[in-house]
Length: 377
Image: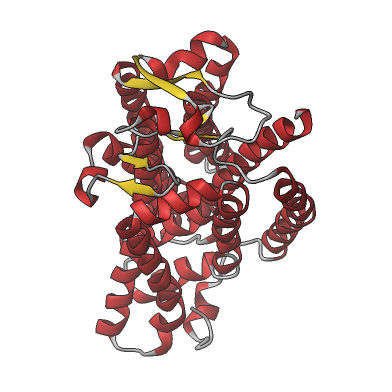
């Protein structure tokens, strides 16, 4: 029982780490795509932007795969419920993720201005939309998702696609997009140089200010929202399912964990510190420091969501007592044991080769070399 309980907590933490890695690494690439037409004023400048992340963007997609794989392996009930109920959202995310690599690979294959402009817009949309969906998804987890189970744990989604784009979810989506633009701007500040760098610096500063404002507004909004309280369930270390618990909805419930454990307030403070200090680092043109502070901001924001929801992962707004938690949606102890073994090997490996790639590919992109290189992006 104690080992199973420990594995459940471990995989909740590991899932958080993977979601943070996804936001930081993939969000950075998405931010560059979103900024492409604004910081690049001509074709060569836009090619510089693309080649600034060219050596890294496809490798960074590993975090997306790791995040989805972790949910599939460790929390299969979350995977099944989310992917069946939120099917349209998942398809929208999938199609934008398919368009992105096509934009990278095909944009510069033809010299036609119309061809390249079309792919520039495709890269902008496929950069902004996934980050909005990412943030909106977390916003909907905080509000609760309209689903329920029948006696054999078959899930039924009773909401609509439009309902997922509620005002609070949109606010969370804009916060996610702002942090993505900040990371993209910081990346270009350090890698693009020339006329692009001051534009990227301005965009990153604006995004940092917007992120602080949206995070503050979101916090005020959360304090007025109802949250979910786990009243009764089997012991956390025992195998269980969502039909064996009692959950109530309480005003201010999303802040209950913070009131019970005041040290948790350090998590949103960490997010604010990353944004504010990141803004100052960008102003000082310290791109590497600004990048790490942006990563700190992402950790604080996602950590705040996790702390507010714990132990819930996917609350049900229609049948609160059928909400999915880290206790009742997790895989068996044997599965978690094997998954932990793979994670111990592959997560450090991903971090190592990502760090190595950034070290080897450091420095500014040479605009003149790209102009005469048909094989560059």
